[in-house]
Image (cartoon, rainbow, N blue to C red; front, top):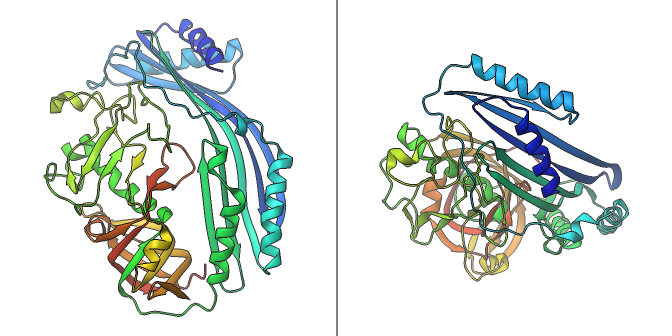
Length: 445
């Protein structure tokens, strides 16, 4: 596929009369089987390919996109980008396109995923659903396998190419009283045990019965990795150097200072064995492994090519926009944990709550990373190291920074969060001494 994409990019570049031209080609194949009410109801497969042309005329830039690959459509797209660029206002931040770059190798393609058939997906789902039916529960979810690629080429000789497979399973199991949920995704098929994920969701659903109502307040809480991943994503944007320069980051005036507990180290590492994500940013600049927080101290920001010179540093390869308008964003977040399991954390807890995951999270105060949202799919009361009952869902109001100053213990880190390779994280479960719940919700899941 790499050679085919390169030939397509060179063909498009040859059609352009702009001062500089950049071509972004993305696409792939995805096959997915969905089920609900214990029945498979959808099996789909799709193939996509999109070509985006960015034309640079002096200090002006515009782009045009097509999914048609015939000669006329490609030429029309190029001409549309060039003519649009001529009409744009000048942008003094617009930089010349990069020349050829060298990238650190990543290996994110598993042949075993490429050969998964609809029959294989259906058989796995049928086995999972059968176990759920045997316990009088109903299951819904999706199992998918995909292959995707992403490439950037320009008229200065740059060609950057990344390809990835993905295998993802998500399931919600419901009883009359509550739900249980679990998911897993990876570029390796062997990392996703579909039957084990289904069993985890089933056991959560069976536990999530006869929930007792507890009063709002501050509780010792164990947050499972999916809940941790959802919360951490909200602090990531603060490491954008442009956001710091513009005074809209929680890190303003705090770089080099202690911001969270001594046991917290956070890294942006697309090369981590559980990530193996894209080794370049949207401009084709090589992405660096960056330590963001080291033992509680905020030590680094991420920079694009526009912001880096203003700070006297090199870009870090985290640009999210070819014009520099949005700065940089750390991908491939990694928070290493401890050599403990989730069960170890539970066993060590005298009194507390176990939280499966969070949802409907919104920002209350971005400068404090104060968030609100709700629990779902299983909150459980822990007494003397044992889960003793289900608990009704809460609404929470909590600062992620304050929470990370109250982490008592962690499990081993695992891949969690969104199945998309850009935003998945490697994080542990966290036991936090205080987590603030402000109300009991009417949401039943």
